Length: 146
Image 1 (cartoon, rainbow, N blue to C red):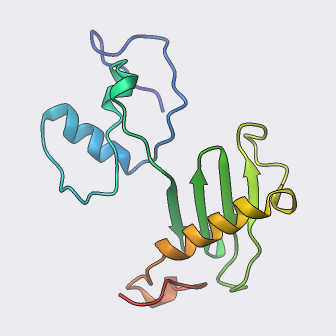
Image 2: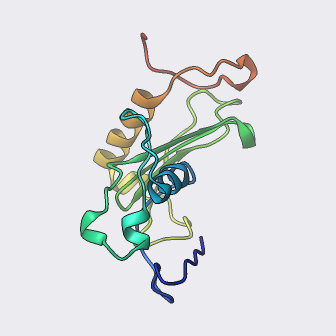
């Protein structure tokens, strides 16, 4: 993402803050002084944009659940990214695991070398999944109960 805000954002700066598109809503709300509900699952990255990294909230992890591309789910947890693909075709699709510090292009699946990380990420995936309202977008396993 590229952002410019003359007089507020220092030109030619960059960050390694892990955030997603949903965080843009919280950031814009923060910039204009609107409070979001306390249970909003997003962070404002305005502190980072304004060079106040010590004030920046962090995600403990991020989770994505997409019906596109045959059904995919993913977790970003620190330097790790776990992804399951084509869940619409194979409910027990294997987890792929990438060390993004060493492999930003996600070329080397290191799941065999990090069983403990893979297990934690699979647990995160299951804990976060709620069945979607649209039936044709349902694939894979979902957490039990309400």
